Length: 229
Image 1 (spheres, helix red, strand yellow):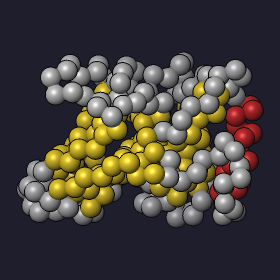
Image 2 (cartoon, one colour):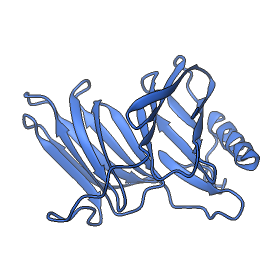
Image 3 (cartoon, helix red, strand yellow):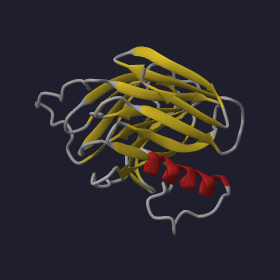
């Protein structure tokens, strides 16, 4: 992984210096996750990112399907959810867990492009975004992700960060804003992550969650690493 780590340090330096990334092939641009192949492993397209926005503090639940896996989650607005190593098509169904008229919006983003958006202000309303037909109405849903591996960058709120999450074969360059939840689809072997603060609003707080259990937590900065035990 040394080559990939050297490259992510290069990318992070560019981001911290506020230099445009357009000329840096392989560095992340915009929000989400990009991959770098290790050895002969090919690069993959940008990760898919879901932005759950609206009235701050409104709770929500969601289910995400791609072609091979599904995830359920609960969160609070605002939150970004990124599927690393997604297999398109993909869909997110978000349900507001509040009885009032609070606004809940969700955007599906690939790289720089918002491909679809939806919103609701109805009590316990639902909003759905997808690319392609991820889950036809009467089709059996994909199985739950196994293992279900998540990196949750809990704070500081609105901290812009860059970094990388990786398994033993593939490294994915990331660039997002806290709070952000990364769902790592079908990893090979153990995983780890490195996160680099750009704005330094306070110490990072990051959890590594496997099958619903927090297996590692880390706090610190401006650079923080976390790995599967």
